[in-house]
Length: 130
Length: 124
Image 1 (cartoon, helix red, strand yellow):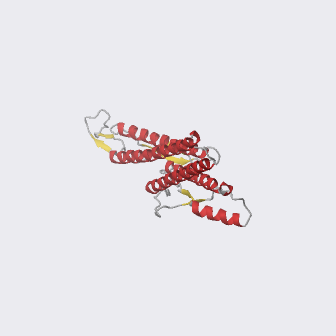
Image 2 (cartoon, one colour; image 1 turned 180 degrees about the vertical axis):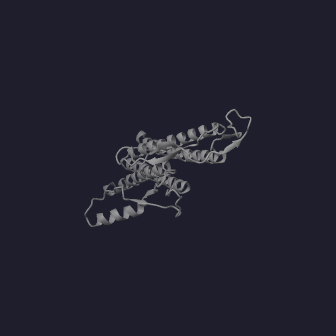
Image 3 (tube, one colour; image 1 turned 45 degrees about the vertical axis):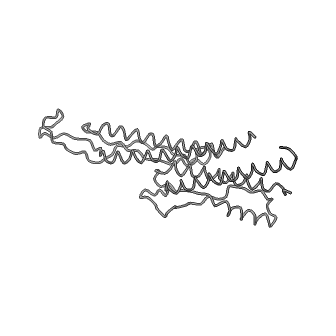
């Protein structure tokens, strides 16, 4: 029983982590055309606490991607320098979409696990009701 | 007759094994994107049961079936992603449906045995 509820909280931590990742992806996509925007990335870490929270996942610090930002030629742009260039963002939409899809898949998998743990709990409780 | 209620011990042992395994699978899936995470699984129930049984035969243990056997690190299809993660979602899904089956089986056996016991006591 306690194992089942701990596996539910593990799945919930996984869903929270994937949701945080999806939030970063949507921030990146929203700012894909913002001049000078640096793509935000985040890593996952396993919680290595052996007692209460062991096995859960948590999100690491948000980092700015250091990929080079392209120089966009647009002399009419308000932020263009004297040569007519301004700094674009280093967001690649294709990568962001792939990342979002991966987050969705993992979220679904966690949700499925959560559901299964819940069903197992309720089938045990069903035994008690008889 | 039902000796020592072994069937109930067996069924609850199998349930506990399924529960523990479910906890590990949930951990694996939650960490499916964590760099360097190694997928874990329990030893199959048959194996841990056989080991327990051998011990019990020698008289060093009572017939109690403890579910928590040691965990093993698995690398499902021998795939390790570049960041050192060995979780394969497909393998975990397979495992979770196995667990589901195992759990249902154990609960079914438990319930049926209880019914038989009740019948033999003359109650409905």
